[in-house]
Each structure stands twice: as C-alpha cells, then as structure tokens.
Length: 404
Image (tube, rainbow, N blue to C red; front, side, top):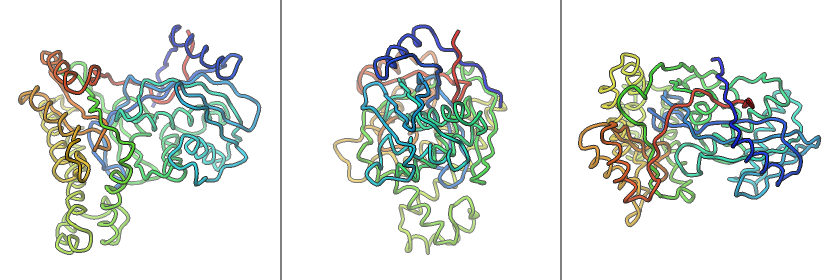
C-alpha cells in the first residue's frame, strides 16, 4: 500500500521543537506520527486469528526525534516521566512489566533480532490518543517507536504489517499483555482495512474502499469515564478462556476448529471449560462470520445492512462475550450506561456497540447527522463534557512527517 504524505503543521512543529529543547536541549532532525485506531468489526477475534474490520483515525501520537550517538533511547512523553532504555540490555525485565520502558525495550530487541543495528535517539512525544480512550494509545506508541527505528536505522526494510507484529511482540513478551494484532496493524497500515489473521505470520490485509463521510452518519467514539487500569485480569480472561476451549479440542485457537465440530462438543466443553468460556466462543464464531458480511455491505454501498450488522456485533459482545460489565461490578457500570444512553438518543436509527477491549474505555456509535447535536449533548450531559468524540478515518498509518 502506498503511503500518503502527512505534513507537520507550523504550530505543531513549534510545540514539538519547544518540548524537545526543554527535555534534551538542541533541535530535532525529524518527526514521526502514528494514529490511534477504531475497531469497526471483529470484537475480540484477532487473538483467535480471526477477521477484523478496523481503521486508523485522525487522532495520533507524534514525536520530534534526533539520534543521540549513544546506546540509550530516551523518550520524553508530555506529562510523563522520562523513559530511558539501555540498548545493552535487551532481555525482558520483571520489574518493567506493564511499563513504557518494557515496550521500547521489546521493540528494540526485536529489531536487533532482525539484524538492525539499533542505536540511541531522543524523542519528545505528544498525543491526542488519550490513554484508556479505547483508540489504543499503546498500539500508536508501539507503532511510533517501530516506525522511528525502522526509518533511522533499518532503511525502512520492515513493512507496515511487520512493524505491527514487532509492536505486538513487545506487548506480549516484554509488557506482559496477551493482546492480539488488530490494534497495531490498523495503526501501522492506516485507512480502513479488513484483516484476516489466520496465518499469524502473514496476515491478509485488504483495503476497503468506502467513504464514511458520504453515508449520512458521523463516526463517534464515546468515553464512558471508566478506568481500565485495574482490569487486566478481566481482559486476559477472554483470550484465556477461549483458548482453553480450543486447547480442549486439540488446537491453539478457535479459527482452527470448524464451528460444527465446536457445537457438537458443547456438552463436554461446558463441563471442562465452563459456560462463560463456551459463550465467549459462540461470540467468536458469530463475530468472525459477521466481519466479511460487513465488508460486503460496505463494498455494495448498503449502509443500512452494515448498521444492522454493527448492532448485532454489539448485542453479541454484551450477551455472549460479556465484556461490558466487569464481574461483580454493581455501582459502576459505565459502559452499560453509555450503551443505554445511545439506544435512547438514537431511537432505532444508526448503530452502537462496545468498542475495543470492553469493560471500560469507550463505546462506538454511528449517528445520523440530523441527530448528532442532540446525541453529543445528551452523552456529554451524563458522561462529562467532551466525552463524545466525532472522528474521521485517517489514510496514513505510521509515517515520517514532512515539514512544509
């Protein structure tokens, strides 16, 4: 896929240069950007090597960068402590699990394994992809660091999908989170794409030519206000339980098992793995079959059918995948409240669904333009001003930015 130039605007360059000078002194020599992503279809299918429909969005993480001639990568993200990683230490460090240095170390380690002579650099970063926003700030950061190393020290030998795989490797092995590959791929590649992860080393990525701006609906991401910082176990349980079902049937992931074979063994699976694991597996089969139908609907310009499939995805996530309300939560059910508000304000039109990992973070809604003002006003009144974000699809993935 050809890359579309992304230009650095003067005001942004001024801010980045000032931040870089304050953090490190001197002047940056280059600038990079990686976008957040929105999952359009395929909720929790990627870790089972299933199908997804995803897009890069017009919120990103940017960096002003300069090689520093040392064996240390230094990253100063606005509002956060300085991150320093020594390139002489490229093994996982137990005390670094769930920290930014672990991601940087993991990415540098994987590039080194590929034959890249990674060297030190200074980077000052700013982001409009807020942590916990459901737009995957972690994937944007991973793709950003991978894009920088690939450009500075590897002559861009690594493709965008491979940059995504490197980010996933760092998150799985060094950061300690068993994530799939959708977030990193959508951020690295850009635009609207459908991805089939069945061959984990060579995912099939196809662009989907559809202009959401012409469909009469706004793409909204609503921040529910819930914090997902203490929900790692909830997220990990989803792939863990589904993989337990696959393991019982002698495979690694569900995409390797025929759906009819799965249903024939549900009685055994309930006893061996538990009902929730079975329900979550049912969601996988339904959701994985839904993605190509969504793609087909968009390619045929049948937006009403697409909206119906989005609603079905939301229902399946709520009922079968069960990633809306964390186990045992009573007083705080922010995602469920946001979904209920969406149903109320859309009144049978548009579509809405839980977005991304679930439990906290965000939901997604496709809102008719004639309802948008009232929808935003209603959501913000309950969830806080600025909770509802109206987004657009970004054509660029992880890129080096050009200065005008």
